[in-house]
Image (cartoon, rainbow over the protein chains, first blue to last red):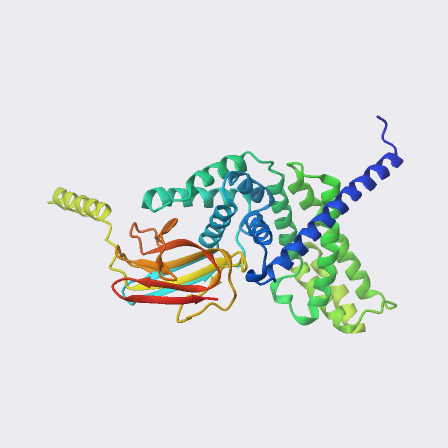
Length: 285
Length: 128
């Protein structure tokens, strides 16, 4: 089949339509779930109670990525909604909290994590360590948890590695942003520039994902492209700074100077040139 | 003499490896977390809290934390004894000694009182 630009447009339209339909269904379900959560349990019908219980049993867990959640739901097939709910709750608590005990002075330090590393390797290690500890310490499992975890690992390990790449892509962008503006420059003034840069990079990341898809080489390609983009972005900032007709505020100019200064510290070869531009710009503002 | 010292050292390290310290007797019993269909986020109820803040209902999970070892602990919900569907041994410093246990219980319904007993009431929580 010869692919013309029209075919591509048609394909994009039908994909968009499907995506929109999926989104509408998702929104409806999410609204329904919200509504049930806000109801009084006494006033619920049996059907509504079962519905709520099913939503809870199928809800995604924050300690897993998309493929992980799919794998866990598959591993839980055959369990009742109440069992699915219990197993997910237990894993969430054990993975998202830690405890330290001091027997001599009778103190307990408890910690709760807002987020944890959901990359494939980290998840596999976490599950394997949990199972190893469980067998070593001989604790009680009356719900078939170990069986579920074993199934989960088999399904998850065999799953498409693209989701792990997605996490890596995100970490590439995060690293890029972190390098772009050093921690010292995160003042109120520089946050104006920071916000602008962040939006631009996120938009660019989206374009890169569409261009490269989820191939295995995506990480290095994205790194190269982001570096090129970073250079362009800095050039634009420099132009803004030196352009007399530019109507950016002094506050913004200062934050741009900060970003450029940080950058010039990282790039020794161009530091003299950058520095002279910065000095020129600040003396004119 | 040198040989004897080496042998003594090896024996000592062998003994310290095989005899991990036993867990001390339980010294803390706490209803630690509650989660339910109506509030599907773990509610932290550790400490002196006597009632949940959120309303709960439907399938419910209750977690009791016991620090130190106990074989006589009994947990009840509205007077009926619960049996754990999972017990998690906690050894946070990986020294081979279990420091604490998390008991996972299931209950169904709405409001009620969870009580942890071990030769007397050790902790009590009202679930709204």
